[in-house]
Image (cartoon, rainbow, N blue to C red):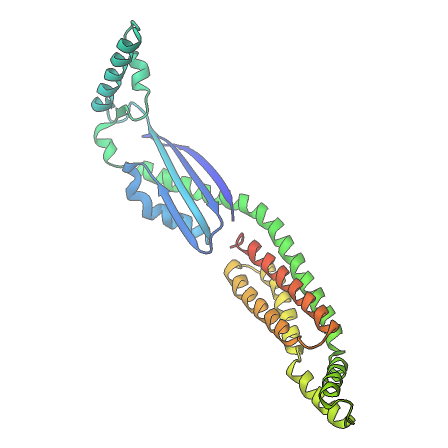
Length: 293
């Protein structure tokens, strides 16, 4: 499920900006963008995010701006030298007179370093970052809950649509034996070219053919699974992966219905249309389930 959260915190060493961004994904996949001095905290941050996010592609970004007073800030000589050379080259190239602005140079990101403090975050800063991570996860989930409520409503409606299609197919199924008798009579008439037909034998053959193509169990399971969709949405805990499995079963039942409804003439064509409509609803539910945990 898509979502976004950004949290700012101030620690003794500087300001922390913790950002989370999520998009749909079958599992949980995290990518990190951390300052070098924060890399040791990746495992701890990962644990905090995993505790609140079960599914999705998650981008974790942490930026940290140190206060100049911490640890006795010193200029980055290599970067400052490069700035001075670039200034003099540009001044000479364009004939500009003037001296470089030291204040402007020192405000360039990365120009000031805090000496030994750059080796890693202190305990207080590390704690503040983990607190920011937990706060960002809560904010992210509030964002995703709003979106999830709308998604769940659409899924419920499509589950009801499947139930309505199953009801229509059950009505049609009741006429299956008569349809098989009619079709079997026509086929036998063509084969025997008008010879007499034994009505009892015809009824037996039609009953066997109808039994082989009976879809009552498939329709019952399809209706039951569609009802389970709503139950899973109403329950607690992780629903996304459980719905994935349930939708696979629903799709299998719809495919079986399609394979058994041939040979019914116009009745079969109607049944096929209804089963295809059910498959379409199932596919649309599957697309939306990717947005759920």
